[in-house]
Length: 363
Image (cartoon, rainbow, N blue to C red):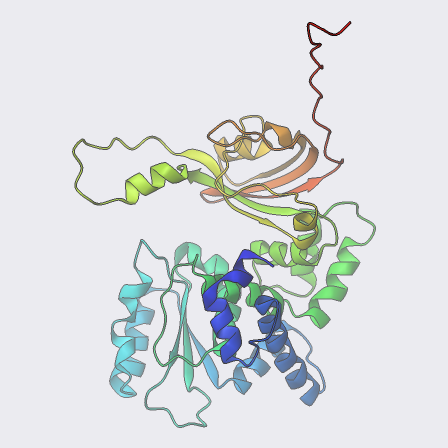
């Protein structure tokens, strides 16, 4: 059972959906969503692509999208829904999207004055300004996941680390890359390759998911891969104790001098195969100087590179190292971070045995 399965919020949601007896609530909720979509697709005799699937699902859910590409779009949404349609929640929504401490990509609103059968009874506002545009496709499906599992009267603005938000990401990663559409393309692109490659991901995007970001498609590919792989994002950050000190706004006896951030694995997601054999990189672990991830981060411009490395070079702030193992690393610099996939190419090397020290009384 995963940590997300053990979250009380996830268990409560499963119970609300009539899935209280499920041993793994995450899988149960995901299955609940996929069965609904399977049924809708069967009813219409199939769909030609992911855009057609999104149109079908949102129609069934009485849901429309409002995308924000500029500040003026917020004014338009406010006028259309708060003034004309008398839904006041839209009047102050912009403030939530511009909260720097809790970045919001999308919000789902159940309209107060819409008829029960209105096709736009639910409105999902998607922020596509700046770097958030990279998550446009995924945020669509994240909000669809919310609509499929909840019926909240007010939009929720949770932290991205909240268990429910992480669960919605998990659902979006499956329903947004719907198996009957995704799996044949992925298998054709990956066939015969020992390792997952960025070129495989690009082929999937090009052939079937042109609106999906490379990053979202990469995550979908790692989920389907039967061999171990870690999806990793490296960016500047502090170790946990320093982050707590920075975020602590209580009065201090002495001034706190913030140390410079270091390049760390701010996100590290191991697929099922990797978790099964305990092939993991702990979140927030420092990226070693010898890694191609670091050299890419320090280089100018967006670029990519690949290398064979030793996982034993990774260590935490206390000096504890990961088990030695040769891994293949393919990485790409994107904006302020490096995204990478890490895959083992040899078994874990046995730790060297210390020589036995003979007792003074042994001959």
